[in-house]
Length: 73
Image 1 (cartoon, rainbow, N blue to C red):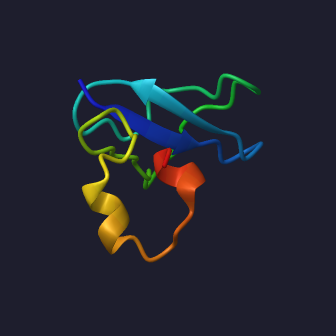
Image 2 (cartoon, rainbow, N blue to C red):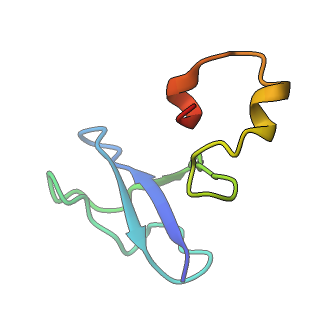
């Protein structure tokens, strides 16, 4: 079952729900205000490479940001 992100059309709260594939939101309710039929929104995702998010060293050679807090180096 995928996790979908929804936005309440009444109060604007965004929330995530583990639900059946293709869920439109018609049967759901906002956890904050209780309004029905929230709209499904596009979610972003975060992916990490091997090592659980810490750079292995090879990434640093091609890094253009040189922001060591992003990879742990």
